[in-house]
Length: 69
Image (tube, rainbow, N blue to C red):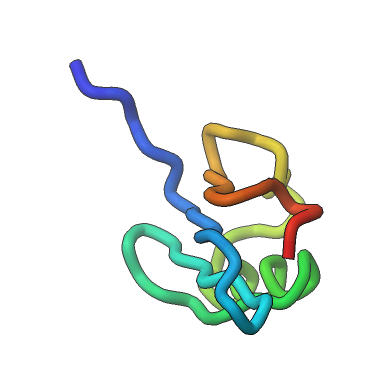
């Protein structure tokens, strides 16, 4: 049985410092900080109160955690 991937992925930083954010394979935008990540997820309909940025079941950070921009 394959491991389940988190629905949200924050991709590695770009040269401009932003990080692409996807949810369920859909690009939500380019975030420049944690506030942007929360806003993109809110707009996508994911409840902010249920989202914990350090929960590996929900979000995968590639190229560094929420402190890397």
